[in-house]
Length: 137
Image (cartoon, rainbow, N blue to C red):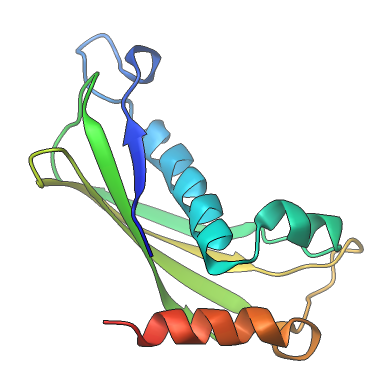
């Protein structure tokens, strides 16, 4: 999969000129949506089909600051997926190829009623696409 690219905007920085930490989580969401598009399962279509994927947990380790104008490349990979919970890893690098943040998020899959969706049964093509992506080096 191609990494997601984000250019740090001025409004994303604090008074010190450093990207505010909360923005990295927003970028993770942007990168995850892009990943789903590249996988062939746009999140917007999944929602239209009645499948929602809320965040269960999220964690970030900030390695070094990013600043206004930096171009951040976000590599997304699925660390694990059991058909109910999907764990995604993110590596964010600046234009100098320096890691600025590593992160992880866990997502579950729910229907409109808030009940778990068994993805292997209800969306086997999605599961195969994720599993194939996980096998890539």
